Amino acid sequence: MNDLPTIWFDRPLDESVVALVQRHWKPSWPTGDDPLGGIDQADGAVVGASVIYDREVFSLSPELRVLSRAGIGFDNVNLRDATEFGIAACNTPDGPTVSTAEHALALIFAITKGLKTSERRLHRQEGNYAAAHDALELEGASLTLIGLGRIGSRVASVAIASGMRVCAYDPFESDQRFEELGVGRASNLAEAVSDAQIVSVHAPLTEQTRHLVGAELIDLMADGVFIVNTARGGLVDDSALLDALNTGKVGAVGLDVTDPEPLPSGHPLLERDDVLVTPHVASATGEGRKRIFTMAIDQVLTGLSGVKPSHILNPEVWPGRGSAQAAT
Image 1 (cartoon, one colour):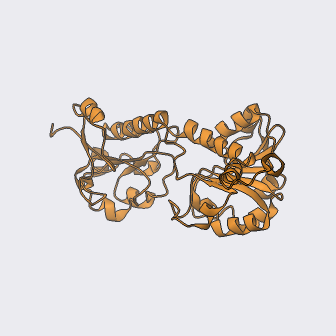
Image 2: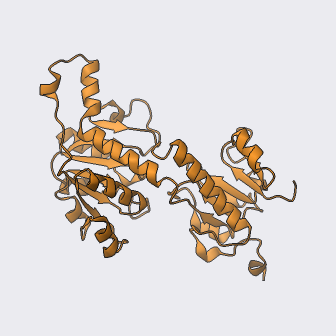
Image 3: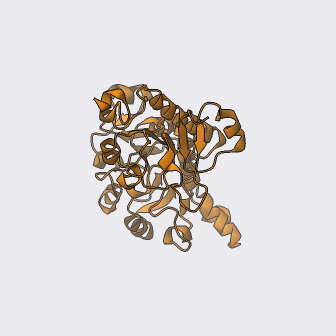
């Protein structure tokens, strides 16, 4: 058992999973108040988004060779520090695709149909419901996607099948990909959002994209625009969003991600009828969790076996800490 690699998880595993895998590798996770308890003994790690993994963590983990983010986003993993310590960092970009795309579409449908507003009116027993209700018919509606990666592409396909007209801005995707999906290509963000009735955000969070959807970009959007974000909370400036909601520039908002996360009780976004917030649960389906979890473990085991993981985020580090090549 001691010769087996130790894989550390940031949360306990189900006993049935432990029974299934313990002949092949030794699972470990925090058992006390320290969220990083036990990582100092790990060969590999499967982690979520709640803790920052940087030189402070890596310096305390002398055996750690591969760390895999269970999900797409890796803004809580300092790639520069991981590389310095010889640790291969990976993610699971295919894992959350289906569930997150479905959640984005659910938010699009919910806010354009005014579901939360209608339910709140019913709770208040306002009456005159049909006359007071206002909703957008999505057949023929214009949807702009900021980002046309895995999740954005999935959203585009379903939206087009639902009769929406879809445009996207993504400087990293090929013209061929846009043509395959039947998505119109915008040459810049201003062009992408100018006529959109709905804007859905599917971009990574970087120093350059923080508050990408802020006062300046919102001002370029059509009056009454609907905005959805299932990517990262930091992509949207909440203050600018609230201002635009108050003026009617933005008609309604659907968010699965926020900054901070989760939003505290009493936050202005939670008090509004025209804002629907879910607490970063888009990928949390049974199928999605299993897919992400399996892919994350596979990335770690692949790296520990000496094979370069398929979704390594810092390829320049390979073969990494502890390898014969790295030692020469």
